[in-house]
Image (cartoon, rainbow, N blue to C red; front, side):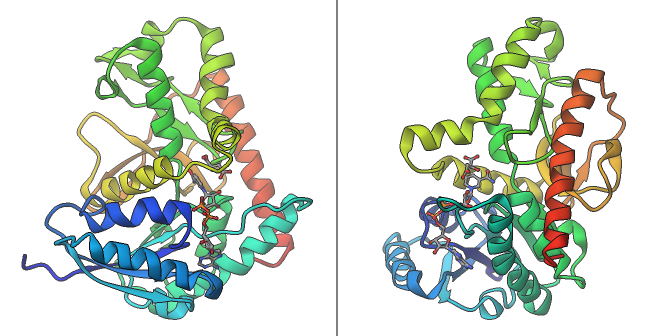
Length: 329
Ligand code: NAD
Ligand code: LMR
């Protein structure tokens, strides 16, 4: 092993996603089997002890690629030299909390983290925001990192993408590897639009294979969009291992690229494509190559898709306006 370790900062390290995520990073699944990693864990002071416990377990895994673990309760230190930052820790919605309160509480987390990334992260920093509301938290962090290229800030809709693949695979009785060009548009929320408009099933247009429009509108789309809530209902806790798995997928693809003839979904800074206002961090079909995500261009958007994309993007614009009003961006 000759490569220098890559610094990976993970916030919310003592949480349930953190617990599922850190072991997969340490095992090499985030960056590949030849890349050693150094973990920099950020927690709030009350959870540092629990993070220390997780770090002891990581040590006990004797992972050949894990070249060190440091734990911090100060974002400035945690993001120093970070090459990859996974922003998982966020303030969950408490009883009686309005959406505005949640956005404000998260502003208190993502503003200083954006500033810390701006001040000390490595020049090749890649940021994935997982903590909800992920798209708008990413927007807040990005707004406070003016020296970092805006496109280094992304939010996670890969879990929604994977959920869409899984539902289609189940419905059609084909392996997920037979499904290409599924897309998630918009916000990581119940308004998201999981689309098969350009998808392929074993090389055939998915729209020719799935002709049951009612299944698409009344089953597939709501099942994917409300899957997070269904898991909370069933588990009494939000998705954790699947969220960690999607975070691994998001960064692995960002670094290693999408396969020829396929794309994935990620919430990236809009350049105005498909009528999504410039600057919003919205989910699009994206390809990755040379360490960059790029929005897939030139897709025809039918009326069914247009209405759904617009509804989710309008919600993102409202969230942006709300955090603007709170002085968070
Ligand atoms: P959790 O409550 O188990 O863990 C969150 C951790 O973050 C806690 O240990 C907490 O101490 C820590 N934390 C809080 N504020 C922090 C700060 N300022 N700095 C560092 N750490 C901080 O929650 P979880 O189940 O791990 O979920 C984390 C977030 O991910 C939630 O917001 C959840 O809604 C979100 N999520 C997103 C997706 C997605 O697809 N984008 C999927 C699942 C969950
Ligand atoms: C998910 O999609 O599973 C989560 O974002 C749900 C949540 O609210 O934590």
